[in-house]
Image 1: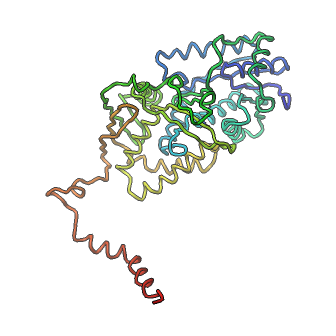
Image 2: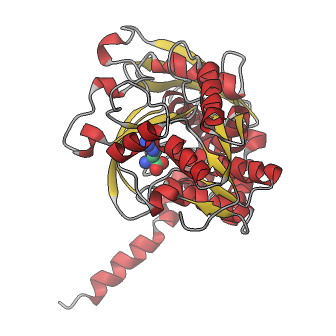
Image 3: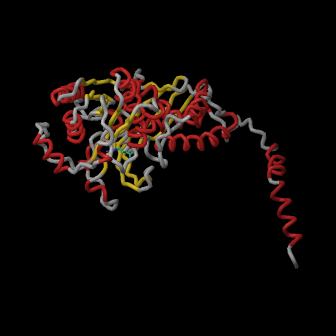
Amino acid sequence: MKQQPHTVVLAYSGGLDTSVLLKQYILAGVRVIAMTLDLGESDGVAGGGAKAELDAVRQKALDLGAADAVLIDARERYIAEHATLALHANALYEGVYPLSAALSRPLIAALLVETAHKYGADSVAHGCTGKGNDQVRIELAVRALDPDLACLAPLRDKPLSRPDAMDFAKQHGVPVSTTAAKPYSIDANLWGRSIEAGILEDPWNAPPEEAYAWTAAPADRPRTAEEIVISFNNGIPTFQGKTGVALVSALNTVTGRHGIGRIDLVEDRVVGVKSREVYECPASITLITAHKALERLVLSRDELRFKAGLDQKYSELIYDGLWPSGLRTALDAFNAAFFPRMTGEIRLSLHDGKATVVGSRSPFSLYSEALATYGREDAFRHDAAEGFIRIWGLPLEVGARINREAQPR
Ligand code: ARG
């Protein structure tokens, strides 16, 4: 441990690593406040039971000697202040990953800072290693919120091997779950579940079916397609009359049954290495698909093209830990400018791993059947196209003539 904190708020999952950290701090005489969050980690798992599990995590921290342990239900805040903004930016890192893990880190950081202020702590700490993206995201967000608060990463300073962690746990009465070591590293919240390490580290290995928990295997999916409608009101989605957490949760269940949202990606980490990550993001992928379809209906060609570039930038800011940047909030303002037109309904057909848009309508639709039709009611001025093409192609024509004349014979 670098500096000796007086009071530290520790982001506590209840797992082996953060339990060992908690105990180490206590043995070193540090006052520890354990902070555990509910971000909907078990949302996609049938049966749920999250509340009881999280209460047990909080109790475990107290039993290990934490001065206090807080359990915060951050789900609504996560969806309202993070996931919904990402949806408005159609945020997909490297074109495919809805950034579920990345989006949650600035909120974890904000809650660490808020909890630290409440308890008069001088430090916050997390269990990220020195190789991943999450350390970057948490630390940048903590610094942006309170530059005077120390943000500690004990596992980066002193990596802990699993056997050493087990030995320490045995020695100091840290309860260790008796189940075999988990074959993957898992991170999950309402916006998606990510699975890495183990057999997946060789990008040639296909993800085994057991890696997935939220999406049905091909053999277990309904044979027939199911249609759903997602409505948007000023950019805010509704499904089956639900919004916010209830919407995302219901959508995870409905679309997960059809195996929607599986992603297998060799991605580029902030720290410069490529890593292979598998995700299952049924609700977020479906929502982004629907949101894009509504944009296609109500935004002009120019707006769509320009926004696509900004959307990509937005996804990079989230991934790279720059959520607290002024550029991100400026892009939020840009996206909000479309809200007055972002009202309408999208019909999707769910089948065998894919959510396909099969219908869209909006009072602000720019689609004109009279202009688009090839039928008798066609209102498009065909004769006007000739003059348009003449002028539109003028620079090409001029260039071609000049080139021909300048050519040595
Ligand atoms: N690679 C993803 C990201 O950086 C997910 C990392 C989540 N962690 C995990 N243990 N699966 O956003």
